[in-house]
Image 1 (spheres, one colour):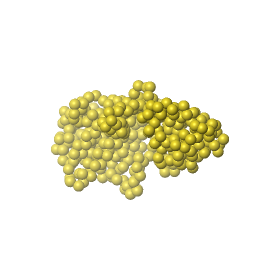
Image 2 (cartoon, rainbow, N blue to C red; image 1 turned 120 degrees about the vertical axis):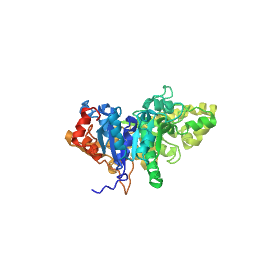
Image 3 (tube, rainbow, N blue to C red; image 1 turned 60 degrees about the vertical axis):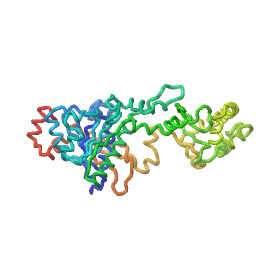
Image 4 (cartoon, rainbow, N blue to C red; image 1 turned 60 degrees about the horizontal axis):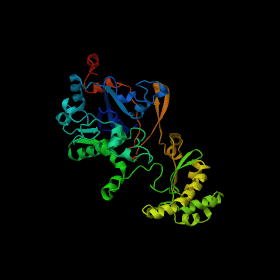
Length: 427
């Protein structure tokens, strides 16, 4: 098969921790030759679950599988002087190095950006850390949870009466990795144009701060501190049709009465046709529904008397809508809402995603053969479709040190020397 991938002439050495896993995967599935340089005991991600058939084994981490497709693995101790010398030989063949050590650590090993430039002047070093390479917090300890807290994401997550919430998974690591991959692609373009390499400096705090959307601007311009609003989108007032609603088999998210979709009376028509509008065809509800939308809500939340006057009828509309949606499934609601142009979407579970018609039609999920397991596993697929240089998973995740002989052979190390280095704990 002709290799028509976007990065098929790029070699990457990945010595990063968990924060850089998705960055390396993005580059590898775009065609780069990504060599994961693991310590002899293995990358820490190999010890993260869930595990294949719940067998706790560094070669069966589904978490590590998902984030290391299309890569080669070698072992190398950067703490060993001979290991560092060997890394320099590898760096001479690399376009990019991805790392996540505390600022200055690589310099202390003689492997910082300036040192690497002496080996290869146009090399690109991507450094992914909690707070970046410089600044008063640059040397603070960090993990995904710290990134979520320090970026403000935790402050906005959860129900109003909750303490700040952590959102599921390592979202800080993923966000930082995406920004790092973007930065590397920009640096590669710059290198192609000018011949110059550079250091790409990624701060997880900065990568996550974008998720605050307009909260920071609201404080900056109005000195109003936005707070957690949980499942509902409008603070201070229970606005019917905006937020999560329980249905027979889960939840749907409604955004009725907002621009882009059909107005609230269309929802009322649906309820009338089904004979489930109850007293919403009577006053004061019917007239209120005719004007129920963002302009009314925006004016009302700034008016204490309006909030008091509207609270009871809005609560009744919410109650009837809750009953109506609660008697239907997610798919029933979604399909009919789409037909009527009502802004209602399903709150998908992982099972829903696997069975999703749209994702499966676009062949989002990719099957990858694991011959050693005697099974084919299904992976999340392309983050972006490129018509001329397609993204693809080219090989299963590597075993620890699986490509030692292959990769070290490419820099002139034969089998005998490989055995010596192994015995000395270098690889």
